[in-house]
Image 1 (cartoon, rainbow, N blue to C red):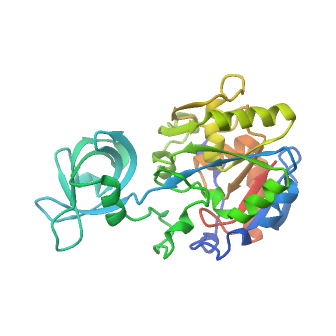
Image 2 (image 1 turned 45 degrees about the horizontal axis):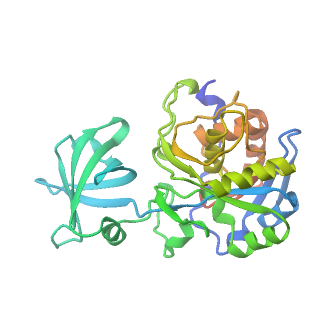
Image 3 (image 1 turned 180 degrees about the vertical axis):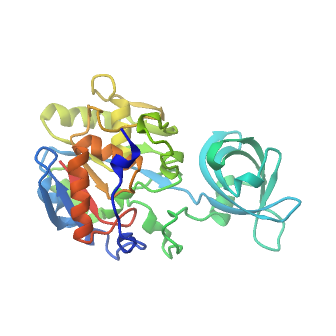
Length: 345
């Protein structure tokens, strides 16, 4: 398939720049994947599309303050680094700007202006599209230094830092390691999740640390030639048991976000049965893929030509998804990370 098959026109004013004051004030578009029927609702109405016995699968990853600003040794040039994946031994895979000026051997210092550096890093390896492997050196505890120096890495279309950093975390975020939030979960409050539980809708938590694949666009015309970068996932024995139990009782597996969907489909590649597991996934889901685990999907509205748009097109059909997106534009839904939600069932 061609990359242009996943394009659509999006007015810039529909890109949500800030979160709504109340998480559940978002709007909700529903899409029946069997008929293409579209509905328009408030997010709080999601409970009417869920039933007792259904299982919400939520990604409990937590975003780290992964955006660092440093100075290149010898020139004083400013450098920006985005931590993507911990490799062990104080080595990280990162995105760096300006990458062309950061060859192997370059040393970068990080710290507060006018003070001795709190941390330094040397470039060990150059990778494509701005990727680098950095080896960090510091005194103390890395996460404490990161909390002091780092910023939450908001998407590039959001131009202001959040006063409340927790607004870019889900209310159930627990395991640190993501470079971006699993944004479909940002709509939930603890109170609304309790309300769904009282309704008989159960919850299971899995972890996928969002990394490089989120930030890199598809740069090939034929999407089959695109390679997804690996992201770490984990499914506990408890959550795997809940997923199997829901399937056995006839409940639906409802993935909250594309990251949850990727994790479930990775773990269920052999017959759809979910067992406790952890590892790395580079699964790329696009039209032609057969879903083995996910029955319904809650997601935000995604970038044109993105792998996330391709995934939901595989789930509900490209023509139906793009028709729903055109209607979302007409109805002035808010798009992307702090935007409105879509429930596909």
